[in-house]
Amino acid sequence: MPLRHMAVSDTLLKKLTQHSRLVKDDISVIRRLTCQLRELEPEEDFIRQGDRPHASCIIMEGMMARYHVMQSGVRQYLSVHLAGDWPDAQGLFLEKMDHSVCAIGRASVCTIPHAELTDAFRQRPTIGFAIWRETLIDASIFREAITNNSARRGVARLAHFFCEVYYRSGLVDLVKEGVCALPFSQTMLGELLGMSLVSVNRHLQSLRKYRVADFKNGDLIVTNWQKLAEIGEFDPLYLHQVVETLT
Amino acid sequence: MPLRHMAVSDTLLKKLTQHSRLVKDDISVIRRLTCQLRELEPEEDFIRQGDRPHASCIIMEGMMARYHVMQSGVRQYLSVHLAGDWPDAQGLFLEKMDHSVCAIGRASVCTIPHAELTDAFRQRPTIGFAIWRETLIDASIFREAITNNSARRGVARLAHFFCEVYYRSGLVDLVKEGVCALPFSQTMLGELLGMSLVSVNRHLQSLRKYRVADFKNGDLIVTNWQKLAEIGEFDPLYLHQVVETLT
DNA sequence: CGGACCATTGACCATAGTCAACCGCCGTGG
DNA sequence: CCACGGCGGTTGACTATGGTCAATGGTCCG
Image (cartoon, rainbow over all chains, first blue to last red; front, side, top):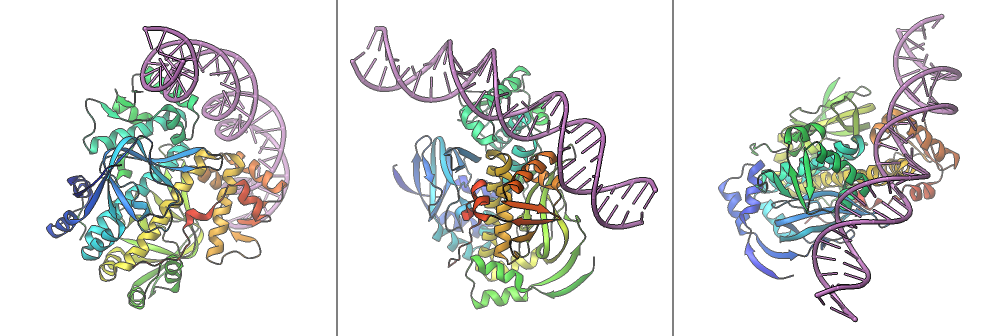
């Protein structure tokens, strides 16, 4: 893993200003944060269940996911993360990781030591609030996943997940002509949605058949967004993408 | 709903110091927070999906729960909360509630305006960190719920939930001789665990049959904790009950 | 006494899991 | 160069888990 130092890229600022209002002083404190760039191999763990986190990372490129490992060894993926996301902010104030975070496909991240972050929060509480909000949005996404995996079945569950990935990819400009990257295998989709590989395959086929969406070679192709959102009962409220003032 | 003013009770301090180290100044700022006591009728909503939250509440007595409402009108409960919990801290920096919060049985809460809280965080960042951590623990509980409802089936799912309630009740001294309150109906357990009323009833019977746990009249009775934890694959790590220093 | 709600049970059905085989693709090594 | 193995995707057959429907009984309350 090659490491090099760099100033925190605009990726972070772009993400935070998407939902929080920051003033000049906040921005300059953020710009002063240093971070190390790290490249992750496909499926490489960034941090593991049981580890004690000292730094957290922002995704520069690629995709990452959180997951639990069951006693049986089976994985349960919990959420997926895109460029600009902060997939382990959850570990900021926790002693030990209760879950792992890995790359999905090749990814590069920027890591910032916790100590530097908490210093920034003390200087400019608004920065802390913005990142706090970031973690609250994460939590909201978890809640939606509980509902999706518990109360929706089959096609709706798959459709809802596709909606989420597609919508969030759009927010960070990662959708090109109805296509966004989703470097998952069907097996992994099953481990995310709490269904078997075979079920994923069959529900996928019904989305294909009705020309709503397709998924192949690690790409998600949305042919009928309206219909997909309807099947998945998708309402983006839970992603909380509204700019408001943090006084 | 009778309202009266009071100083924030020790309930909050007890909760925060359970997992965060606070110094004298922090504590006195917390003691200066004012709050309104509010009594909630059984099943009364404290705040609803779509509302804009201006205050948040700490549970003084009783139980509360978060839930989503599906398009079909069906409820999906997301998490349950006990005395000392902060069931809507999730709304602290969010524009609109993406879920509702209601009382489970009779409950009383203490509400604190958001503005007063953010002021406290600016004065004493450590207080913010402690409450931030509180919300991160919530998120961890959500993650566990994803895994529970997606990757465990039947009895294990029910057993895991019982473990969580029993364990958390123990932390705040609400277990008496193997019994703790859980004022749910079997229908509600189903809406929490993503299974039908009938399944809940049947899985409950198998826990009864093997003398592991029982559930009746709104009470959870644990007769064999060891076995229950084994069936539910319960590992309390995700509750993050470790005191550590927040510098 | 009647109604509402909750728990329980049986019968039946639907969804989804398991198992197994097969295909195509790709990368490795003989 | 080609054979082979591994992996991901697809399919069929069978099974199991759990959902739906419906009826019953108990308890509490008006």
